[in-house]
Amino acid sequence: MLKPEDVALFRIATQGVKTLKQDTFVAPRQNKRIKKSPLRQIREQEDTLFYFSDEYEPLLNEERAVKYLREGEDSHLLKQLRRGDFSPELFLDLHGLTREQAKLELASLIQACEKEHIYCASVMTGYGSYILKRQIPRWLVQHPKVKALHQAPKEWGGDAAILILLDV
Image (spheres, one colour):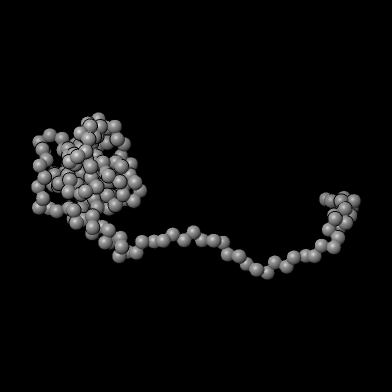
């Protein structure tokens, strides 16, 4: 409760002040992000899918660990991938997907890595009937953004996963 002296001091201090009339409403600013049109997203995905041909047969030694290094890249990258020096920031699990679904997901992974500036990703192929395990590296070596790939070390999936390095 205020003392009568304090009320008197307040009245003296505010003598001659006009009350403000607040009758305008200022809407809060909305953060407007420019959204990509669905058509543009489809085109980007189709552009990435363009690189994944089912007929292309790269020279990959499938007897041992799957590995690939783009021409002109440092050969030390493969050793670093094998040892697990790179930690994948994105993981893609393809268990239970068809070839066409896996191709779309792989294209989306590369787009996401490019958009988020992610250098290393992991693709879980699983074992299953080995169809995806054999096909995924064949698709990946065709893409110009893929610098290197190697079978993942045990902590990132071992035989059932592939680590990829991207040029982002």
